[in-house]
Image (cartoon, rainbow, N blue to C red; front, top):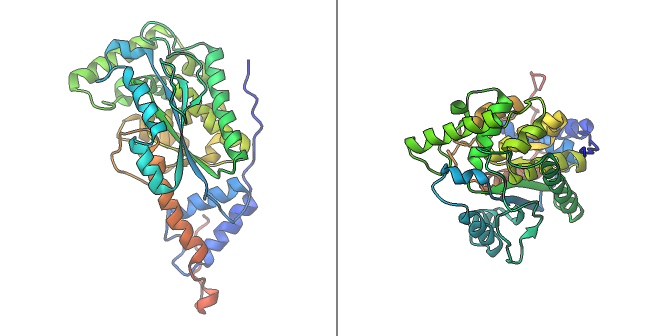
Length: 351
């Protein structure tokens, strides 16, 4: 069972046109910094200098993780189902933030350890939670690939529905543990260097979490050169679903926004599967988890929000949306040097 990926290519002529448009706007060249680069990148993804992100979604992959049985979290797995249903009811943190950003929240049950009845939850359940990685693989290769394909299909369906940009989100008690395990193997770094306190652990709890991850890596011998195998043995359905969102962005030509560390780990896996996927990724914030900066460095991406966030759910992606909208107001409605009869700034770099 293999992934079939039909790559889109960035439209470099659209990117050049967007860059030229920025340079003709009546302001110092490059003065909106990385935000100008993000709009240029989205122009390349969309194939037009007329960038459009008017229809936005935050897709939240929800799944339970068997490693919770090792007491690596403050709460038990029951919270995953409760919060997933809260997404559908519109009463979670991401719902309030997405509403302010004009984005739709789309919760996906890809592996919650319970049957959920709330309207608005997309049922794509691959299994009822994963295996306990401290004792066994999280899932089979077939399950991992199925979860990735689900993410890809969701991107396809959203593009057909007219969505222009997608934020990634997740909900799954224990998923900073699975993320740190995957990051340690793929980045070839000691577990302690890529593991944080997640949603709130004591120092003793963090030490336990590190020991559990080290045991999981030892038990589940993985080939770091095979990212899907690493995902299957140490990850989760939520991470796999987000991998599919990033690969779907590459296949269907949509910008996919990275949220926090768990979303970043999924982005790293997607990039290891196909490096071109990075061209369709938009960074939002730098998570407080220690793996985040190392992943962003490998991806060559620059987050624009440094707020010490640790909420997940796609909240960082929702925060980015209004910032992009503000920048697009300048892009579309500012005066140009031509219409105010002022000599344009010259560009003296090669960017």
